[in-house]
Image (cartoon, rainbow, N blue to C red):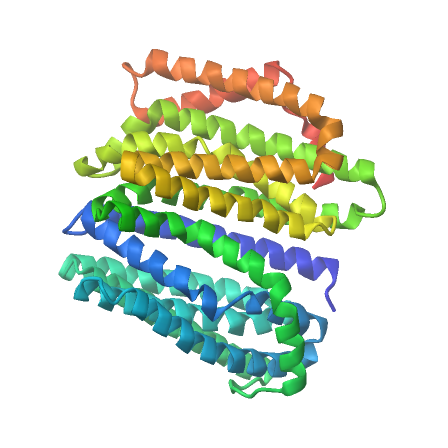
Amino acid sequence: MHTSQSIARNSIVYTGALVVQRIASTIYFWYYSNNLPGGAGDLGRLQFVLSYATLFFIIGDLGLYLVFVREASRDPKQASRYLETSLAIKIPLFVIAGLITLAGAWNFHREDVYLIALSYAWVALDSIALFLYGALRAFQKLIYESAGVIIAQSITVVIGVVSIKLSGDIRHLLYALIFATVVNIAFVLFILYKKFHIRLSIHYNPKIGKLLLKSIPAFAAVAIVVKILNTIDVVLLRQLSSDYRAVGFYSIPLKIVTALSLTIPTAFMGAIYPSLSHLHGKSDEGIKTVFRYAVEYLLIISVPISVGFFALGDELINALFRDEYTSAIIPSKIILLSLPFIFLSFPTGNLLNATNRQKYTALSRVFGAITLIGLNVLFIPRFALMGAAYAFLATYIVILVFDIYFARAYAAPIFSIFFRQTLKVVVSSGIMYGSILLLSSYAPWYFLIILGCVVYFVALFLLHGINVKFLRHL
């Protein structure tokens, strides 16, 4: 039974594992971006082949994972049958997606084709691991997935670091990903058999298959749009600029934004979303209150990070990355300006989902994907890397604007409160920015970060921008 205690325990354990994994992943990224022999060129090639394979793997999933987890969670006793049928559907999709991926890459350099093939193998294996853990999710046993996340990331880091030390060949980084995922699959198979007596088999059950296939269209649109938003910019930057170094430079701010957005707002909304769902149909005022506090506090966190990076981005990148990455400084500052819009799209999107308006969540992101593709096609040939940065910023502004429009029934009544809070946050961030600039010639960047945090929160407190009552709504 899915008790509130088990849900809370699972959320805490899994969120903790993801935070650890993402910290390790970010440090690992920093290490290999600074130590690959080809520098930004090697980094760009690695990010491109991974993004390319992930983009074309859209065909290999089509939202089936979400359908599988939903149905298996409704009837855990049938989880093994849902798993067997899901895998029977996925295998042909794997083959089709793989053939299309390789066909699309056929005119690339032979080395790139091989790297794309390796990347696709990893993406496919990772998808299988995800499905196997999906069966455990049906039983609310996220502790095993949490362990698997840590194990896989640890293996990837160890093999990757050793490989860079010994050869510096980016193929070995992909080998590390593949090997870690195979170990992860072996681990979850062992748990499924030992704890739940589920053996891996592939068998198509017509009744279950019909149910799964019937539900796919409702989830496919969201899955496709999310994949496009996460990968198409890297692919277009490489294809339109023919410059792997540009992709490498672009990867620096992209990694920072991804690490922050997949940790802070994701964990935060894990606590907020159940409240929004519970209040739907019971208290519109309650929804407005929770939504307001969620927006306010993500604003409080995201704006100073963007402003702080705008002030200290030069020092941070020069201190943490090799000299050639100075070309990433200005694009990074532009991309980091998107952070408030990305953070705020979490509560707006979750609000739409919690109030049964998920189609509008998808529609906002469709508009975002169209913006991302269109502006990249227009800007990259003219502005190269800077064009991709401008397109990224514009995309998340568009997503947030449409989210707010679709959620206007809840957003409009708190607009005046939101405007006042935004003003307080912006003024406090401006004071922080001024203090950092004033002392930048006299103190190192790490001291300025601490000073900036203190100045910002003191200013925000004096402006009555922090409301401790919000903790009661978590």
